[in-house]
Image (tube, rainbow, N blue to C red):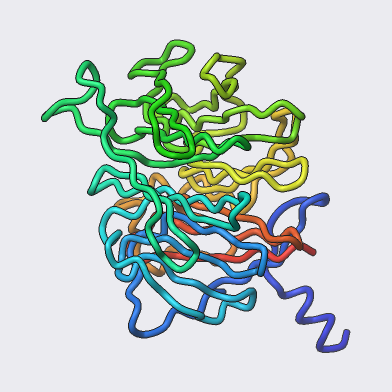
Length: 315
């Protein structure tokens, strides 16, 4: 056996026979002037630049494909950085972010210029001084409509047009069809021709699917524990499961693979902020954000107080 064969066999791997990855821990080269907080979201643009959203300062850190640091911005999101979505539209590529501390959704350019801010909906029957709006994620439809999930507040989904004008809401706390227990993540799925709205109903351990005008279509709860958010790549759906794995479904909502699964992590004392000696490079503890690049490589951000980023390079 030569040295190249030995290195290949010793490389950490994740996945199964159809989805096999080399694990690349510490992929991102975080500069000394950036202290990571909880690494909540990660996105990739058409140029192959990666945008990390975390609760430290500055809250948006940009890397190239090799993990080399490019720049950083977003000091105003320190502490509240949470939902993170990159959307391509007529005017270019834009980021849509949610801030759980300020209770806002903000649309920005890729360099941080604020273009639109949406705060607490004017719905006194839902929100008041005690009942807060705490948005956790945001999605954008092909027509520009914006959907915001109030995951940590009152468990509603709110729809706006591209200018930020209110359209409708649905949900409320509960376990019945169309109700939510922390609609933590939200995304528009374009794989079936007719767009559908996926909601990660995390507290109910399920995913619910709606039309773009809020009509319930279906729900499923198999092969998941705590779905956080979504990333659609070709015909596949990737989602971070907070209880220690990344899951891949096909376009029929059927399981393809669990990646980096660690069924013991959530039962460890202090989870998700475990002793550093516990972590293993090829096992996840608390996946929260995910994206997939043009090569099929997967990038995972974890909900850990000082951040954790992992690249899974498709083999």
